[in-house]
Length: 271
Ligand SMILES: [Zn+2]
View 1 (cartoon, protein in one colour):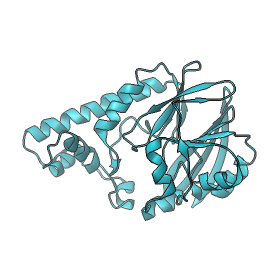
View 2 (tube, helix red, strand yellow; view 1 turned 180 degrees about the vertical axis):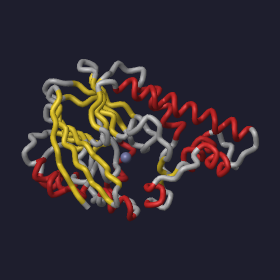
View 3 (cartoon, helix red, strand yellow; view 1 turned 180 degrees about the horizontal axis):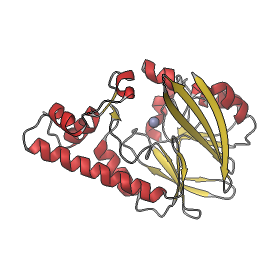
View 4 (cartoon, protein in one colour; view 1 turned 60 degrees about the vertical axis):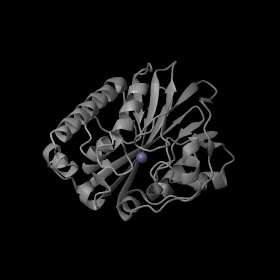
């Protein structure tokens, strides 16, 4: 397991990138720091380097985009060592206090999460120079939020984007819910997107629009094939014939089947 930490800066936003690689699969993670606000706390697999780094950052409040272990890995340590408010969407508090079992492959990539107690995130987060609107955007996780800054056109998007054309998803994700969340956020006026796994991009709105178009197309195809009488398994084979290494590592907790079943479940076509 190789771990690397790198730093970038853009218009006062500091980006801390950590890379974990395991069996030729490389995964990047970004946490962001702007004007006293720390957004996400990184994976615990990189905790030694992250802690060293966090000691040099004068953060005064912490926002978690959601409760997953690669976004809350050093939160317990922060809570024990710094007197700062730590926020998460109200529906994620319980997940942070009572951490559920994390499958082995996720512990290998990102490490585990330890219990900490965040408070419910307010509707807006104020820093000295900025105001961030907090927008609940479930789909990837039930407690997922993004932070929108109207004046700068920034969107801290957590795991809302990740990729424009996902070919597989986690069992806890839902395509129809994600579609609703992306539609909602596309009504906001942003351009620069700060993604927790792909970093910063200037054309964030276009990227999210591309993802929305793709997900809507997939949804249409799944429903049309179902209408023709195909089962979920047959639809999956037809639309997503390939498997990825992550599908196997994850014992199919990450699989294209979840794309199909989340669409059919929403339409209540499975039973
Ligand atoms: Zn996540």
